[in-house]
Each structure stands twice: as C-alpha cells, then as structure tokens.
Image 1 (cartoon, rainbow, N blue to C red):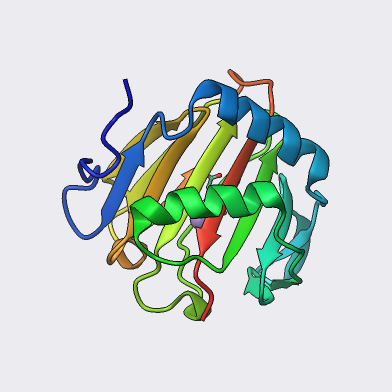
Image 2 (cartoon, rainbow, N blue to C red; image 1 turned 135 degrees about the vertical axis):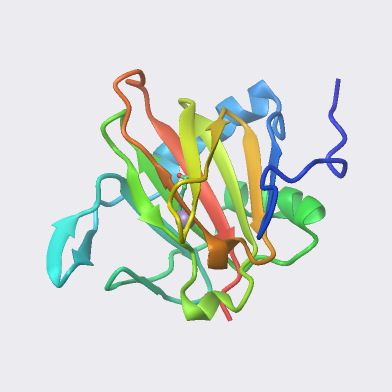
Length: 197
Ligand SMILES: O=C(O)CCC(=O)C(=O)O
Ligand SMILES: [Mn+2]
C-alpha cells in the first residue's frame, strides 16, 4: 500500500518540525539508486577543521549544485547534477513544496563511519533551513537532541528508501548526528538536499 505522502506527523513535540516517510521509494527503485549512486558519484574523503586542526571526515562526500558550500572550515566545489539526482530532487520537491538547488551526498562505508553532533545552520541556508534527506542502503540511527539541555533525545531508524524532512525552526533548537555502530557492516548513502541562497 502506498502511504499518503502528505499526511505525516511531526516527530518533534516542540521547537521544530521533522517529518519522516519510511517507504518513500519502493525497494526496487531504492536498490537502483543505491547501486547507481555508488558507481557514478565522485566520492572523496575530505578533511574538516576541528578547533583549527585538520582531520579527515569519517565518511566520503560529494557536493552537487550551482554554488560552492562552506562548512566546518572547508569549501566544497560543486559537481554536475546527474539524471538520478535530478529525479530524486523532483520527487522530494513534490512533498517538501520547495525548490532545492543543491545536495550534499554522504557515503558511510560501514558502521564505523559516522557524523558528529551538528546543526545545519550555515548562514547561506537562510533563517529556517529546509533540509530533505534520503537514505539508501544499511539502516542507521539518526538522533536529534535539544541543543540547549542536550537531554531530550529523539531517535529515528533511517531505513532503505526513507525520506526525512527538517524544516521550521528545527536547526535553531535541535542538533543531529549519525552514531557509529557495531551492528552494521554494509554501506549507507545519504542525500541531503538544501537551498543555498
Ligand atoms: O546521514 C545523515 O542522515 C545525516 C547527514 C547530515 O546530517 C548532513 O549531511 O548534514
Ligand atoms: Mn546535518
């Protein structure tokens, strides 16, 4: 049964809006995107600056869109849109009701690759960023926690073919991350569509 893509509840009870669509793409389409993106994206391991020191990110990345993007002390120069990226973008825009102009791709090679706590609050994303996030491959846990007290934590399992949409004031009040896990050995691809002003 196709779920109703417009009738979805907010997984945050206050100070933000995060919608989760577990079966956004069917299995066959998800498998196709996982294989094709694995092969066609120019994946690279890039350094970031943490307290002025350069360290390698624990995952591979690629940036696609019209403009460069700077975060954690590095500037990513854009690659071209591929047919698959354009098709995914069109489909999520129908639900998000915004026009994305860029996408950051992350490849977590196994359970030891991860993403630290952060907010997507670079100023070129605007005041209330809309971030559309597709997951393919191994299921990983996505955690959100209240930025101030760090105590209130919300967890979501990001399954193959799922879509997570963050909007409203979420990036002001909540930070998010992908923890390491010993339970996962396979790769996961994440696409976070963004609007760069
Ligand atoms: O892998 C994910 O689901 C999260 C990625 C993320 O937070 C980011 O790229 O900013
Ligand atoms: Mn993020």
